[in-house]
Amino acid sequence: MSQERARTIDGVYGSPGLHWVGDGFRVAGVFSRVPDAARRLSPFLLFDYHPPYDYSPTERPRGVGVHPHRGFETVTLAWEGKVAHHDSTGAGGVIGPGDVQWMTAASGVLHKEYHEREWARRGGTFHMAQLWVNLPRAHKMGPPRYQALEAAQMGHVELPRDGGTVRVIAGEHAGTRGPALTFSDVTLLDATLRVGGELTLEAPSAHNLAFLLVSGELEVDGRRVAAGELVTTRNDGDSLKLTASQPSHLLVMGGAPIDEPIAAMGPFVMNTEAELRQAVRDYEAGRFGHLE
Ligand code: MN
Image (cartoon, rainbow, N blue to C red):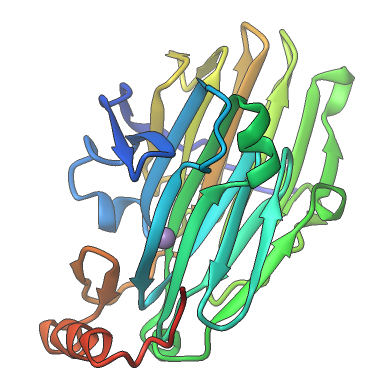
């Protein structure tokens, strides 16, 4: 018989204000209000949430031009709208609703991120998220990699009593694994709950575990959580039970913390200041490759 212990809630953080990334991504920095976020949420470094927003039709797709990354992964999830990505390794692709783009920058890429051209021409509602996932020291200078994870590849778990659905992007839920290849233990779940639906998240107490309630309302650890709130948990148990009081959509992030120093500057996340300076030198010397 298992000795499950319930995790308790560490913090509930309201949505910060929105800012623009380029001219195509109107986002909230979900982790920006969390004290000691890099440690509490490791291996996740950053979470830009793009709430639903209507873009007018345009012949010039909005987005972010060519920029570098080194030392971590960018994970982009599409719920509405389409994003196109191209990078200096020659990888690229388009993601649409339900798809995920898991880009390992590692030793360095240049890339650009835009609304997909045909979608931009029609315009419409855009709803996305981008997470930055740290890499362990041993993999920061490894080769870049690009994983296009399509909606149909995701793990799929129906919750008991018709309570809702969990899409498993990375890691595992209730014995079902997601398709993403990762360099440390990472769990990423996209869950939809019906009213009264119950979701029990299992995670070893040493792992970090948090979720953003994208929409709806739910109860957890005796607290009511509203749409837009980020919930972080303590490392004091191995299960967390959520009950939806409204139809709810949430993104669950978990994983083994990477217990290494972080030196971060803009698009570079390394372990030491010397490695950051090297990243800048390599970028300025054109060693991240070439992208028009
Ligand atoms: Mn980027």
